[in-house]
Image (cartoon, rainbow, N blue to C red; front, side):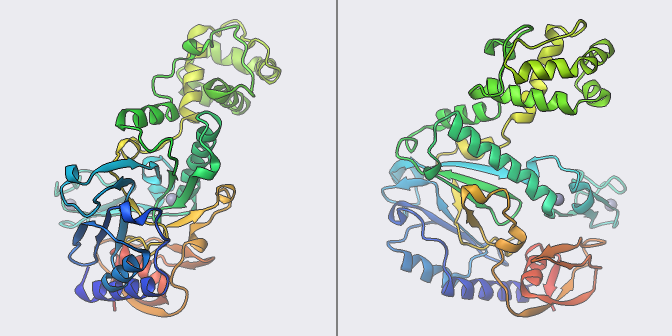
Amino acid sequence: MEEKTAKFLRSLYARYYASHGPVEPEDIGHREFAFMTFGERMVIRHRGFGSYDELKAFMAKLGPSDAFYSSAYFQRPDEPDMKAKGWMGADLIFDIDADHIPTSCKGEHDIWACRSCGHWGTGEAPDACPRCGSKELAELKWICNKCISAAKEELIKLIEVLEEDLGVDRSDMVASFSGHRGFHLRVFSEDLRNLGQDERGEIVDYLAAVGLDPEALGLGPGAKLGLDEPGWRGRLAKAFYSLLYRADEGTLRALGLRKKAISALLASKDLILDSIEHGRPIYLPRGVGKSSLKKLLLACAEEAAVKVDPVVTRDTHRLVRMSGSLHGKTGLLKVDIPLDEVEEFDPFSSALAFERDWAKVRITDSLPVVPALRLADEDYGPFEPGETVELPLQAAVFLMCKEVAELA
Ligand SMILES: [Zn+2]
Ligand SMILES: [Zn+2]
């Protein structure tokens, strides 16, 4: 990023914080704060603030590219030695990143290019350029409605499992769009604050169905399974029902089932669906045995598992992006979303910070093309390297933050 661009973004972010500020963090006096800056990418850690006004003034002066606070509560949050901070507990944090969910759109909008020979491709970047072997690759990860929807689905599953299976109160949960490619869920509860890493890890394992064994849940041939059962049995029942409902030869073959089992399943589909719907022993036709059922149920577990980042949840000293702060890679806001509005939430209209003004930017030449962008129902791009364009500020900031444009 050129210094001119970094300076522009720093002052823009600073002005934003002077007028808006982030959402006031809960229990501010016991949190550690951390910031990053545009340009030289300075990292400022171990900051403590006595009041919201002090925090806001600091951010309005610095114009940080990214602003974080600790999920943990500390007696002395500004102490640089972690051991001396005096850990008092930590909120339970979940991170859902579209990056970790395979979606077809990545092959369309994620681009990499070799800085040495210019060879390029779409999707995830290889370790080295397949043409010249150089490891100097430019990589662009984009976001679109498809990846956001996929991440949203995981968030909805997460809220459901936490509430229904683990008894977490909805009023203790705060869901947010991260400002980039995912969603966060934070649980503020005195009861959970003192959980250690292993206990948090157990929660992740439960969500992700790690080590789930259908037989241990009593699910073998002839077992009764109802759609409204609690816990993983009920989740498997629903996933099994919808898997069979949609099943064709191709999907069943992909699960590793034999030809005979596939045709038997397809021929008796209605009877099996009917048995699950009425909570009767699962009807299994001849040719579908114990091992086929297990394969089917494990595929269902995979489908119903909640894809959260296990590292984030286990960590009792995690830094979390502040709600109401701007993301350094997009210029979008991290916004909290009421739990019952997750489904219809659209970051490309609800996470915009800069509505007025325009800016002129020059597209860099590190990539052969910069994908199109849709903000507030307007389409921008795709852009060509070297092109100079005047754009609404939000779109211009997005491109500069993604480091595919410089201030012209
Ligand atoms: Zn190359
Ligand atoms: Zn996408």
